[in-house]
Figure 1 (cartoon, rainbow, N blue to C red):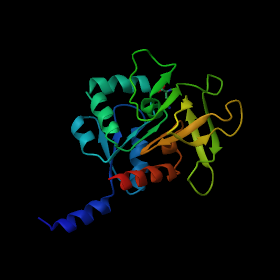
Figure 2: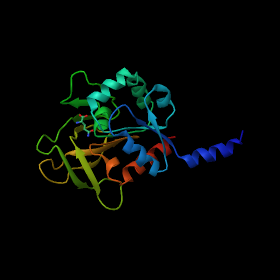
Figure 3: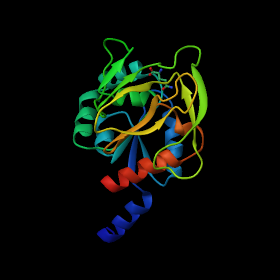
Figure 4: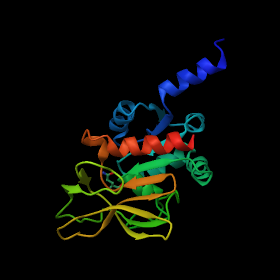
Length: 213
Ligand code: GLN
């Protein structure tokens, strides 16, 4: 057995263990982004894996399907509990929907996780602007604006008093709509930072996890 200081050093070098909910959706893109940030990404499909991580990414995909799979895999209540206990989390798109306290325009049986005190409208941008890209100013991120890719995205219709608004749509018919938020250690974006190669949002989340661990 190596001395514990050596084990610690190795753990630090490996970076925080960040789970990626891997039931459905674009979880692979998040593994790559987290790895590039120096974190150790861990696929999460069962309770033991959820227990082993310091933070969790909930990817884009289809929120109602993910909701159903969370129930089938017996992860819904354990995940709610970890969020109540303060586990850092980051949800992109469908992940944002799952982290909401209230969801509009979803299926009546869809579950959500209450990670952020917000109301989210699913597929909010409508059919005409199903998918689009724009540049966003993102509070706390320095450098160029963030290139944001929206794919059948939600927006935040109500952000509670404890919720920090990090980005809004700059122009067009949806100007002013909230598309990135943070409450404590929980972060959510309506867009997909995992698909652009810009690591800043994942770096921010990795820093949140590191600070909380
Ligand atoms: N529209 C999807 C949903 O309701 C989200 C789309 C996405 O994650 N790209 O879950």
